[in-house]
Image 1 (cartoon, rainbow, N blue to C red):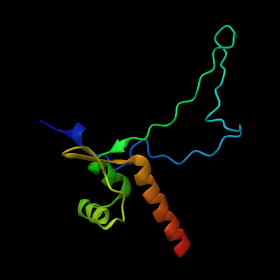
Image 2 (image 1 turned 90 degrees about the vertical axis):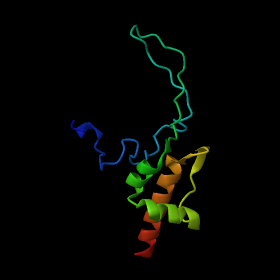
Image 3 (image 1 turned 90 degrees about the horizontal axis):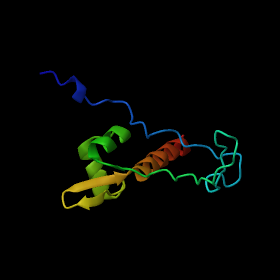
Image 4 (image 1 turned 30 degrees about the horizontal axis):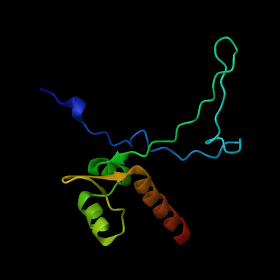
Length: 114
């Protein structure tokens, strides 16, 4: 039986995208907006939802960072990479925002060094 559908993609997961720039409206992420319904009437204000900060398990973090398992875990022990959250006695995961902040910090260091 072929297991082609179980292959791991080397592409980054869809949630890893370039950060969005600020919108032209002041406080647009906080402001509630009114929308017209199909008859042109104004509906009740709709608040924009905040983006969800997912928790990624080790295989996903390895794909995002490009690091190897041993290297990543060594960096966690040395305090050079964010520590995982303890989700249960045997399950660990990293907040996506912490992983992306680590990557951005490395990018800034490499730009400053050159």
